[in-house]
View (spheres, rainbow, N blue to C red):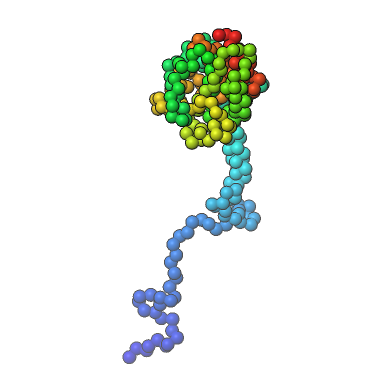
Length: 256
């Protein structure tokens, strides 16, 4: 009769070692351990996933600097395109293809904020100040007090720049402006003369009145003075002061 193994024997069954003695298999993990150094020095900490750390950390400041320079260049290019016509006094140089003195007033109608139509042809026989503006336009806000003052003078019958002709003011809010914002702008600056938004026309940010006169994008505010003969008698790009506005009206009156 064969001898049996003693109780403390290391013999195992053909199935292999007991479950508690088997090595536990683990799934392979990503290389998140510290990386060895070729020179045998202390390992390099693994900092994957953290901006500015890791083996490529020395490139991060350079990349950020390049991105900053690129952003500044793009901003400068945009500002230059928007302000290429700027003169030292803040006015703008007339662009090619814009409205011109002597140009006939187009047959267009402004829908005023009070809902009444204003055909621009009905302004014939008077000197009409036609101002294109927007609530988001900072120079338009700078100019607003001058328009309010001189328009009030004209409404009171005060002679402007020596002309005896009636002078009327008309404001044209750009189509790209929100109706509510444009109305709030008029109320904020106390304009009591005719104002309306240049809505309608073909799809796009430009209204039919702006398109008919050829007022270019980015040249806001634009002020056209229409002579009594129904033609553009004077024009100005950029914000006007009170004296500048009176001079422009006088220039138009003399031309008429």
